[in-house]
Length: 162
Ligand code: RP5
Image 1 (cartoon, rainbow, N blue to C red):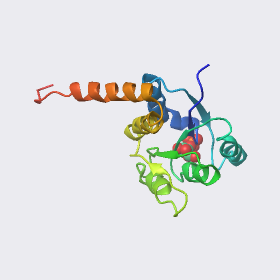
Image 2 (image 1 turned 120 degrees about the horizontal axis):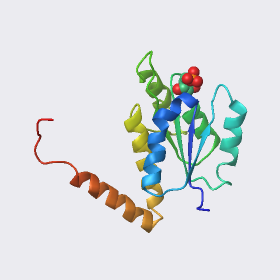
Image 3 (image 1 turned 30 degrees about the vertical axis):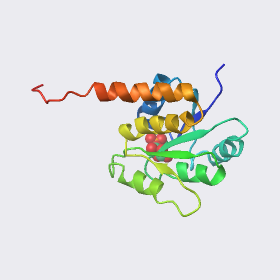
Image 4 (image 1 turned 60 degrees about the vertical axis):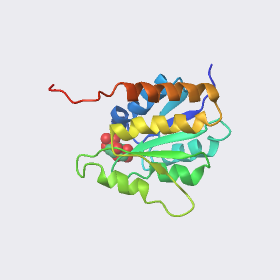
């Protein structure tokens, strides 16, 4: 089995619709990952155990998505030195601004690399994780370069009526 490198965690089943964009990106780039529901509020012991064991389990990046009072990414960053990428899930009440502010405004000493709100942020979290891992993985770096070149090549030079 391929070596586990990325953990994708989320506060609720309801976050999966957004967070699967990160998983799809890692699938595309052939980066091994696991997915878990880990809630800062509903399963705090699970959060603590996940953070405590992250290094010894071989996780090199953690992507954490949550909405509303989105404490999961910040609490995970407090528990492990594994880099945490935060994804603010779009909420109905405040359109995800609440999630964004909850995740981005970390105190000095415990950073969370915060992405955009919603699906684009989740997809970019996958790319960011791949970029970090590519620093020490030339084959992944090649795949990421190819993915980026293909995206650029897919953009037409002129707009057209749709
Ligand atoms: C957060 O509360 C989760 O990350 C989710 O975005 C939000 C709502 O959760 P559910 O009530 O849908 O389970 O903890």
